Length: 188
Image 1: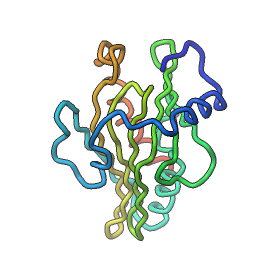
Image 2 (image 1 turned 180 degrees about the vertical axis):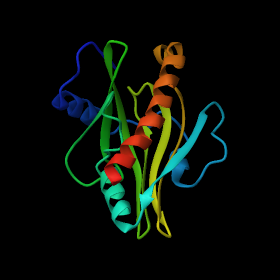
Image 3 (image 1 turned 90 degrees about the vertical axis):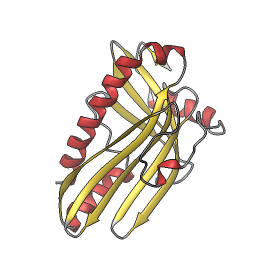
Image 4 (image 1 turned 45 degrees about the vertical axis):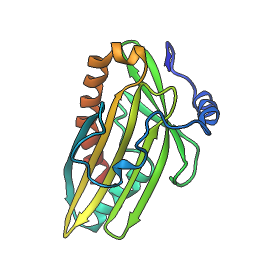
């Protein structure tokens, strides 16, 4: 959903409420719960990550940031969601600035996995999102090493997104760089 001016949080929340019962825009819901070696047919798989630091304090800060969905780069995105703990069924939208306009991308959380040395959540795209697919974010503590890992499968959703595919891909790659930087900064 494209806009010339950024929508208010209230407008985005109203959009999310209108999408609350909509189905996901793809079939393989929940596939990112486990590591993927290939994407479903017709989708592109992205897997990347980085070491964030060492120790339980770094891990706790990284988990707290991820639970707030603070891993999105503020240079061109903002996340809008209702207050409360992240849980399956939670709705959020990414509001992205690009090429002189703003787009809103509705999502629904599929799962949240909390373990003593791991925190993860995965979400899927809803109607109105420029992409179709699923993404998961995970923070792990292995020994003393804290890692942040992301995996996603996606493809453009709709004619406008397909026409703008190369631009969308450039923003996905920018997101990959900046989310790693963001999580490193939030984990210090």
